[in-house]
Image 1 (cartoon, rainbow, N blue to C red):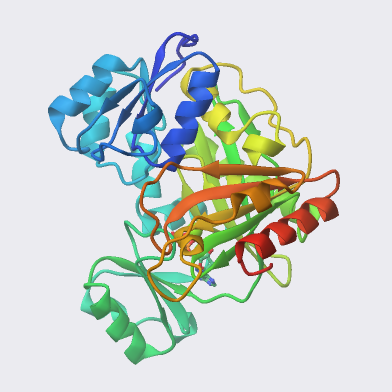
Image 2 (image 1 turned 90 degrees about the vertical axis):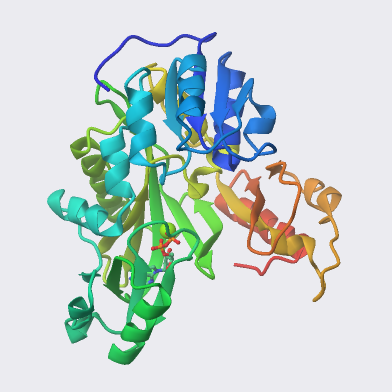
Length: 388
Ligand code: ADP
Ligand code: MG
């Protein structure tokens, strides 16, 4: 998508995928006076439930894609694994951002790492495993983490392998699909950068986020990042900007980084869309990551998403609905949480709670970083989330 005129409020913005990211995009678009169109196969998808138009079909239904292109003046995605054919069909009749070419890089861990390398950004030492012979890896990669090259999320599609025989068994267990074996690094902490890049090449970013994962799923994001030095922040911002610019990226992009004990900043992976670690921005920044997505898609000025107040974001997983050992479902104690000053509750409208499922998030803001953290710890205690 080259430079084009702005799409003004009143136009219709489309999104592929109806999950919580699509829902928060729809909220931001509607707040600015846009109509929205969502394509998702689930008739009660979180975004579909709140959109003006909901095309209820899968990504490969040509008639459904034609209906989305007809309804929308521009289309973005909330899901990186949209098939290339779907994007190609849409792009033939409506502006699509980010491009299919950018998505293709993000869809495959090996291509992603090659792109980091081409941008002069370090990633974990790794090897691509495509066939039996590739299992004869450099022993320095073990112990490692074997990850499917495509379709992984929230720690799914990954196995920790300590030695050569576990590597062989792990590849078997993952179905002998194309994988990347990464050396397991000793992480000091993890950070992420969410940026927006316009069709004119302008880039703005959210403040650096520090992230704690539990069982491979994001649990806590703290902003400003308490562990990061200014040098680490500058390096992460610079790397993310180079990665976006060299993809000629248009839209919101997130890059996740590992920081090692010696201060080295290593790119982990990227997501071609708003990211769970940027959800705090709805309540803590001048411009949220979803408004940024609207602005990039509509070719509007990007503004300045500076932070207004310190924040901690807690993910609300379905586990919170099952406080006992059994299957008895119970609504978490929201009044107790909302009694805390600075608590912002976001629930995604999912009808069924399941363990490990992202049901919502809670952002706790404060006058100071310490106050936001104290409130977040009080919220953890009220909800039965392990403290951080
Ligand atoms: P997902 O796509 O599921 O988010 P990631 O590759 O980001 O998968 O891995 C999830 C988490 O697992 C990371 O945020 C990090 O905590 C841990 N992890 C992943 N790769 C490595 C590695 N090479 N060394 C150490 N920890 C890792
Ligand atoms: Mg990740």
